Amino acid sequence: MNAKIHSAAEFAPRGAALARKRLVIALVLSAAMMAIYFGFMGLFAFDKPLLGTILAPGLSLCIVLGPLVIISSFLLCLVYALWANRVFDAGIRELGR
Amino acid sequence: MGNNTLSIGFFFAFMALTLLITYWAARRTRTTAHFFAAGGEVTPWQNGWALAGDFLSAGALLGIAGIVTSNGFDGMIYSIGWLVGWPIILFLIVEPLRNVGRFTFADVVAYRLRQRPVRLAGAVGTLAVILFYLIAQMVATGSLIKLLFGLPYNWSVVLVGSVMLIYVLFGGMLATTWVQVVKAALLMAGGVLLALLVLTHFEMNPLKLFAAASEKYGARVLQPGSKVVSGQWDAISLGLGLMFGTAAMPHVLMRAYTVRDAKAARLSILYATGLIGVFHLMVFIIGFGAMVLVGPEAVAKAGGGGNMAAPLLALTVGGNAFFGFICAVAFATMLAVVAGLTLSGVATLCHDVWTNVVRNGTASEAEQLKVARIATVVISVLAILLGIAFEGQNVAFMAGLAFSIACAANFPALVLAIIWRRFTTSAAVASILVGTLSSLVLIYLSPTIQVDILGKQLSQIEGAWWFVSLRNPAIICMPLSFLVAIILSLISTETNADSTFDEMQDRMLFGPLRPAAVPRDEAKTAA
Image 1: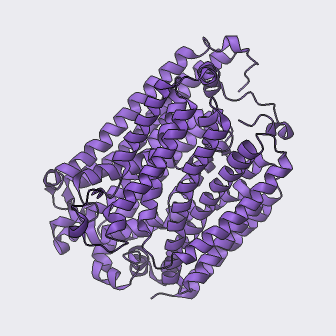
Image 2: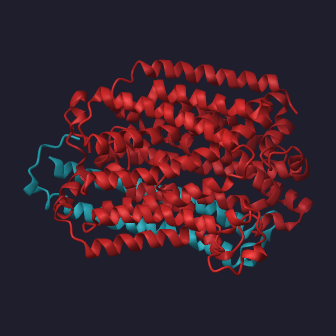
Image 3: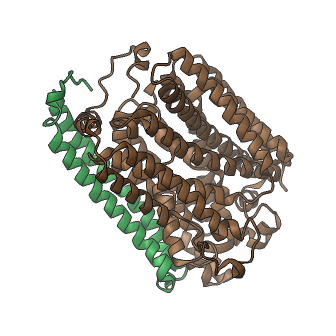
């Protein structure tokens, strides 16, 4: 990161829009993660019979959804990392020049 | 029970390798930036493995496998809970943390606020988490080593404490990082191999394994039960504690500083999430494998409260050598986790308490290193003594308590400091203290302590006015901590905190304007 020295007066405008954009994306993705996880935990806490539905021999609904929560956690991370690597970092480089 | 000589051989090979790494790292550890952050020279891949190594305790392999073996699906509740906090770290915390802070998460909370009160409160929150988690780990380690290797409990605790002291004292973060990487690689290799060996018995099809389990022990093993997590709101509260506790564990957050920049920190969290996720899926297979191929009765008979499920399975599907390997991996795991915890405790004592509170940010490099080394010895000795003192006690609640404090004390202050301009010193201090104290008090009044530890009858205390039925307090403590922080921020004003928000925002995006490769100057620019 080859940023030049900035005076305090320059701080406010520089990057404010980019910072807001990242915060919105971070909050939306966090909300998605929480919805997925607490949706699952809500079923676990309040509707065990539904989660226990046997779909096929050796397969119940919770054995499908549990690993799906794990996989979707990683996929959400991947979405953020790809966005940040491409869009956000490019924006930072642009502003830092 | 298997061949001990082999496992001891594997174990000594691990010790020899890690001590060699420590020797190599010791010669490169000259400044506090090296001691606490490995000079920022760790690559994202290394850090991803090291994060997985830091976070996956023996409980993640032995503990969860044991729960799955005896209860079926319910063990996965912990696997999932320990993973879902990682995306939160990635989205909200890690990049600002890397760009604004230096060694601890209190660097970020205190950045715009008054240093001394915030750092002291941050130290209370951090040390409480570290202390309870360390005790839980030391006691588990002592009893597991006794079980796996037949070494007496006290000797096990002293051995683990001393080896971790050597790693941290001489090798600092560089040695600890490599110990984590080696351990994580061994753990993943052991887990994947064990899961694959299980699946060879079921035509490589997990569904055949689950079907065999339900044929043998009933469909209930594939369904959620209420033995592992009882109570509806307790399950939600446990979930909150695991998710946001993970996102604010000091030893995890500290690893953000070991890489070059925010992008590297971002990538290392992504890699760690993938590794930990894959590992937990393997453990699920391992737990069911032990259920079908070893049997819950045999596992229970082996003692250790279900912890022998994975080692016994290794013995069944891979023979003596594999049994020895898995035991040694479990040992390496415990060692690495306590080393990471100790190092983050040392960073808090030295960087937050000594340098920034006692010396007001003016301590010299040499003095800070000396304090760091003294703190390392103090924490290690304390860990050994507490480990011995708590022998045979039920300390399982302490790990849960550590997550609850991290969730209620550290997480709200950290997130609000990052995203909210109006956040003030009194709000930060109060929310950390309220989060810590309310977690302690609610755990004390819950069945976790009153029934499990003090041995009271549930029916006797149920009616008492002070009784708290939740075993996991996060669902009360975390909103309480947020509420205190928001109210205090709104009724107090702090001009300085407000006016420096833009500057911090800028630093969050662009990183610190570091003098390139002039380590001696770094002491002055301490956050």
